[in-house]
Length: 474
Image (tube, rainbow, N blue to C red; front, side, top):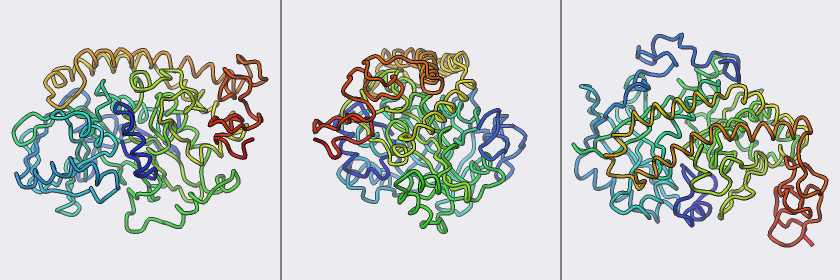
């Protein structure tokens, strides 16, 4: 997971708790193009694609073993960078590539380059896991040789934060998002050997590049894609900074509506709500993508989905019943902060109702039995690699417990959200504290003194449910 604009202060807050913090419909993409249609026969450079539009490296029936060979001197530099948590917290330039050789199934890439990946998950594993601390990596194929591709990819990520005890969060989330038509990358499970020894199990991901954007926005593939609202992932030399500045300068509904495609963004936020995310823009503010569609505005998109499914069950307090609007209420300290655009949109009753409608539309695409089938099949597939992983702090019982919790969440979460939709859209819901506001529009339905329009007291609580604590308090 990454901190992005939260910076070092929020990163330090995340580290206060060792186990917490991590880094369209009907098969149609947001601008009308087919998502995962399987109609393309090749990827970049003639690479075969599987039936879901992914390069063949992401075949879900295999757990491939990748091998990285790194010169001892370069490896020591990586180790030193990995252990330099102080530099990481000050947001120093930690993104240094090192030359490496990558091998896979008889293929050899002699001019690969590797750098460390992650931020909060990286810092946590260094601080808490000792000899079992696990590096995450980005492997580039075009850093040394421009425009080079490996199976159609310019870069791939080996991702596995310490708090995904299922070893499947990204794999599950991305598979469903792609199936639903929401932009996300191809993923699969993979083993990694480092300098001849097994290092650990990962979820491998392609990077967010023009290839991915074109899949989901085929009629509008050339817009700027921003990670966390600050780092360009496409058009890196020509990205329109003035447009991004206008996005961050939007401080009311009129200015947000002028620069953001709110309706499309609601679909992304609804997807994160269904995935039970504790660390996206929904659930944490800092992990998200922005795609600039031009006249249609920026659209929020999910990114870094490893804090999903059982994450809020095992490492936080809400379990599967995290409120889909006031998602920070009831969370463990340090409580996550809602982003400014979320606050502005969700302060409007009309948009809250449309948000409920977006959730309802995705509930029709949610198949709990399919998720359980994926969990059952993939957990058996990766079990030997987990058991042999020398860099995981999760014991065998932890893995079993997390996978069982994930099976429960994929059934329980949609049922909870159906009750939210009935309340927010249809007006059918309880007012448990008797303050005149149904639970779906009450940030604290256990306290009659807390609700929309209540007096704001100087007590460290958001008494009037306006997403702000103690403003103009009495």
